[in-house]
Length: 254
Image 1 (cartoon, rainbow, N blue to C red):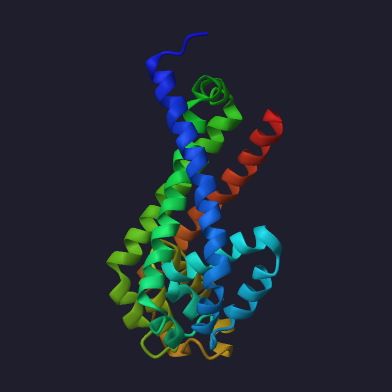
Image 2 (image 1 turned 45 degrees about the horizontal axis):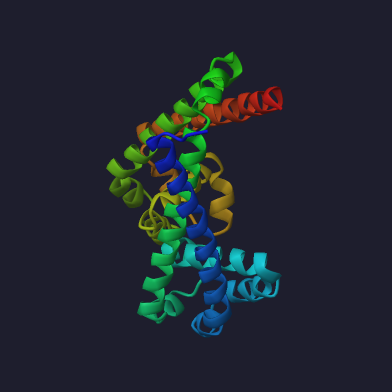
């Protein structure tokens, strides 16, 4: 059977990507073997260090998972600091060259796995076209799209009204944590919104923990509160719909 030029290119990219992933996994294991001591020495004041040690002793898969955790610390330190797993001083004193190399390695791993996923999807286009004709799959896609749209609106609203939100909680100790989460990228901003929803829906819990001032909760802008809770309600509806239809579609396909 003679392969067309496009098929030869597709095959070549697949082989290079497959080999590249194995090389990167080898590099991750090598870094885990040679740099773990340095990494842990610079995280002595952080509670996450005990988890990293446990993962390091978990064989090859444990070391790979440990590297994933280290990548996440390097990318989203604010989230780990907020949750008490990482000491801010430890991260500040972490070797800059090692930090840079770890982030580069993460980006390469992400790119190669993304290429593999794209190749897998493109090789199954005909099968995907048949699948998406199923009504359950269509509802799954619609609910997922709705979830993305609502989350986008929430993030936009939070960005536009961030100053108002923080000023409304200026007497509360949680304000600094919310700001830190906002600065931690997309994951941190989603987590921040979850905290705000918790404050608005169950203020008594946050007040009893000393994180929020009762006066701040009482004086929180009513319109902004209604808008945020309404968006959260739509988020939950689309989220549950996506999970429900997704499971039905999955069981139907299996």
